[in-house]
Image 1: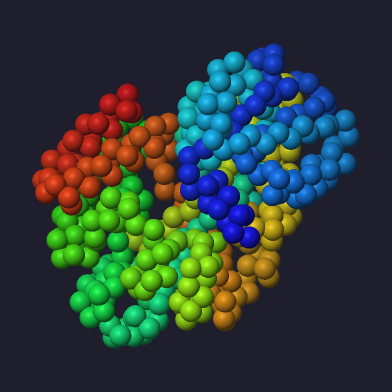
Image 2: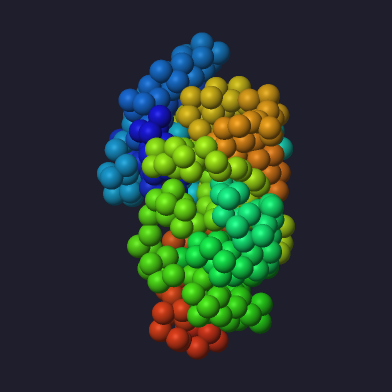
Length: 420
């Protein structure tokens, strides 16, 4: 299980994707006119852990689509980006590709992926709206959402009680107020931020304009947030180690240095490995929500090459592997959530509200909030670089006393260059 969790963390939370030489796109014509035949499917570091599951899905698909064969290739994570870029440049992308959101946007911006708003219009409403957003560049979706994670909250009731609280915070505003009291009375920390690229849109500050052509975050609200976070840092509520990303957060939680840890419930059992005692006395709740009332999710996607000679069959396979039945089966093999509404309605996700196991209870809350969770990454090609620029300026405000407005001005100028 630990191996699976580590693997899924890398898939969902880290930039990546995969590549190899796809047999179905050699012509580069992309007319999708070939019928039947072999389609190539690339995944990212899913083998051998999920061999049985994926071979089963492929076998089922082939039995329902006479004449179609799926050639599955798994690509090591550390080779993924380079191999995919090379393949895309040569017109050799696989017919069907498993991509994380960041790199999916890069390929989509290069015209390498099929428009799923059109190709998969018949199933679009099957998916959670927030998950469908992950596939977008501009106003067009270039991928189907596959499995995902959504935030949850594991918290220590004993620390809260010592500080005079009987329940965890529900909103960012409430969380910061509680954090000050908790730190003063117990020495433990509450909310902490090492980055703001999700916090800003969660609290009413879009990162880019709707047309994706310029920065949109240099606003009075963003200035208010930067000033507020600097104030909390100066109070000692955001330690330097956190700002510098030098903290192993699950270790801090297991050592009772944190009153709560906002993360996906698939990671809760890390605490159990580190400290069974702390895990057993912990409880779970819904993720803390910002002022716009939305929670964040991280999505893995399935895309189809725009140059596939078997585009129709490739789209059908993309829809098949992301349908409710197959996502439900996958979710039962590893701690991820489905992007399809019907799968999330299964008892596997709807039970657990009263569970004594904090991970199972966290899964219940995470699944329950999928309707209000969204992929909050900006729908543009250079989203990773954009986030890096904003977070670096945020850190300068905290660590170097940089003027918050100057930081926003500098970040805006840098981001506008990236968007040209």
